[in-house]
Image 1 (cartoon, one colour):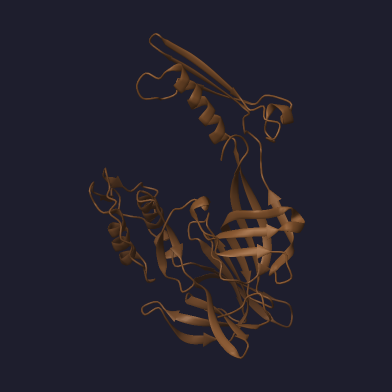
Image 2 (tube, one colour; image 1 turned 90 degrees about the horizontal axis):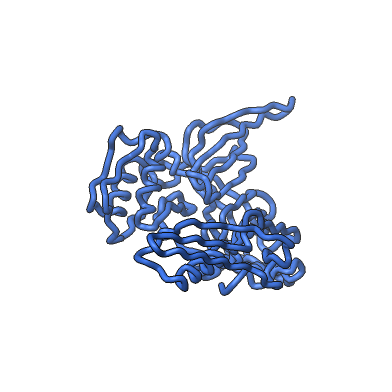
Length: 354
């Protein structure tokens, strides 16, 4: 097993993949550099830029990091991508071809469902998703068992691709697409960060793989410190006003020096609520609105962390201690040190109980 915090030697290998068998058929010796990007907020979840001496044509390429440590050699897959758009440059001595490559989900993005295409109420969500994927993509797909069924007919929009249609479909069972480094398509249950266990802990101690620069961003814009609820139905007329005046809260009226009011007229509540229930509703609403998402950007030496994984950060010199965050993007440079630029997000409650 590799100790990612210890000394090792790293090299990289690249292979053409047969899309029918998904196996490697030829090693490439003309690749000069590769940058891999994993991004949870893009449709295809990832891409790569591959620089080579000459163009490859349209082909699937698999990327490996070869690690030598303590006399042991291991091949670590980093990603599998479909090469598409090439561009070339010449500096008077060397010609370089730079090629854009995309994850296997690109095949689902390339064509739309037939007009009026629909699935019927009662259909099993994940079985249908698996069947449709099998018909429209060449990459291996890992089937997922789920009892969730459609409650109404599910109809494709005219603007849908197979990818957007399937993304919306599996959301009905609380699933989302994921890819592994071999290019297999997975269905992953959606989970919040609090329910995840950290896969890796980044520290700033002597065995750290974390680089020193780190950026922490958050935006308090629009977060209210006062909630007003007005309810009127028949003879019932209630108002509630909840104020965050906690001196320990950064968004409170005390610390901001002003009120930022969020008002709700006639909330949609079941039955005839009491004045106390309206008061509790307003208080809970302010709690829900008093949270902020932080994004933290940092770089580190390669370790087996994927987008979607939970990590713990203990960067004491930056004042970051015991933070659990979910990785949302990565950029991997296939070169000396295999530096990974990573972004993770976490949410903090700014008022009331967490």
